[in-house]
Image 1 (cartoon, helix red, strand yellow):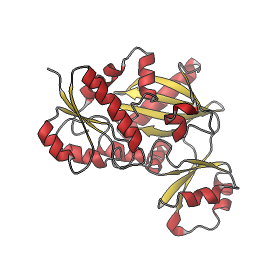
Image 2: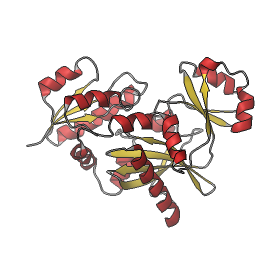
Image 3: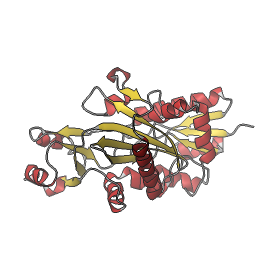
Image 4: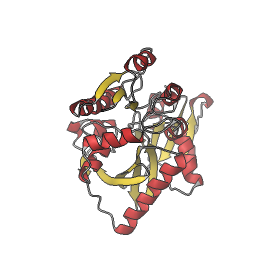
Amino acid sequence: MKKRILVLCGGISKERLISLDTGKQVANELKKNKYSVITCEPDHTLLKNIKLFKPDIIFNALHGQFGEDGYIQTILETQKIPYTHSGVIASSIAMDKEISKKIFIKNKILTPKYIKFDYKKKTTNIINIIEKKLKFPVVIKPINEGSSVHVHICTKKNIIKNLKALSIYNQILIEEFIAGREIQVAIIGGKTLGAIELEPKRKFYDYEAKYNSNAKTKHIIPVSLDKKDLKKIINITRKAHQLIGCKGVTRSDFKFYKGKFYLLEINTQPGMTKLSLVPEIANYIGISFIQLIEWILKDASVNR
């Protein structure tokens, strides 16, 4: 008998629409394959729905704050029902770009240099600080958002304007801009699923490039790397996955520039939309969408 699956999606983060799309794709595929499925928002009805539906597994299709930062994972642990993707600690670490970067640096994983900008401190000489420590252009980004939400490439001319636009956050990262190729690697259960290269028509692989088909981002698979470089990026990805303590499927985002791989971040809950990369990588090596979903479900557990 097929298991009962509760697909958790939606939420209140800036990635809500992507989460709803991921949840829809997963739920529809499971229903086509005769699973008993309900979709549920992470709101006041969640615990009631869990009690009524009695799921065997909870598929966490949430993205962004409260969904992949350890918050919902803490709640799911209290229910003692197996759930998918990474657990409380790994999720919270991976979502915090500063903490994860500190772990990368400590373990000799190359990542773009950065400084933390605190809006409360009212720094007046930020341009001088950037020129001294990083040099322009730079990338500014929230510490705990995903999907390239509010990420900007900044020059000396527009840095102040863009910093003001991100003042809704208490703190952000200002990171050195790394040119070069965009390469992403997927891990499933500690094993390499594969890699994909992206050629965005926009300035970089931002929110629009990721989720808008009209952005016409070119997906290149297999990635053109020699055996030595391919082995290197795979080893870095596995190392990062293990260091953070991730479970299930993850996707690591890299820049490849002048023979060096720079790890930007690790995503503990990659999207499962029609434009998402992990299903595309899986499909390339002969793993169908339902097979990928079923592997994720089989990996589900508590105490993650």
